Length: 204
Image (cartoon, rainbow, N blue to C red; front, side):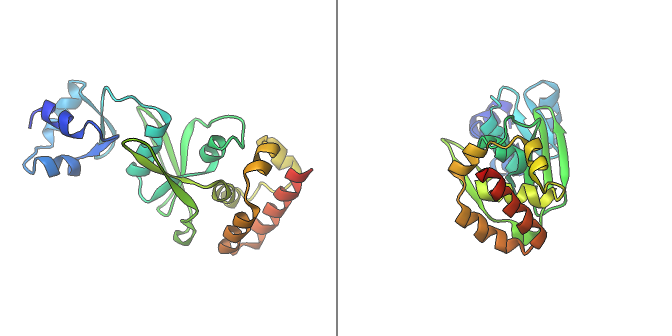
């Protein structure tokens, strides 16, 4: 296979794998990937995952890539809270949760962080779609619960102040009924108490 053929058939892919190439050319030799990297045609993101060097890397593509290089996972925690304008600035990493072990990948296009949650807690996310790609991101209610679940030290008004939570925006967007429904699925009294403290905090 020539590089032009690969580019033509996979150019719409935000990220591709050796498996994707194998579907096009079952006899493909892995050494070609090394050759194309040396020539600057492609870039390796992590083992087995590649992008074309001229790819435009915007936030949506980073989210798609984050979902694909470590499955199952979905965007959550600080990144999701920032996307919903609940905290003031974006984080340096694309943050996700996964039912696999916690992990982190520092790549040439950014850092991808994954925090472990129990498989039964892998819910409360939605599929966001654009023209060519799609990615999974936590709903506001689940992003909050994921964050507080993984940060048990966040418990009172002083802690909430340190997060610089946008109370007005949170009050406007939050579905408290859904939040409480999701909260019961965590079966965690400590988390429930801290979420109740948060709800009281945003009403002040």
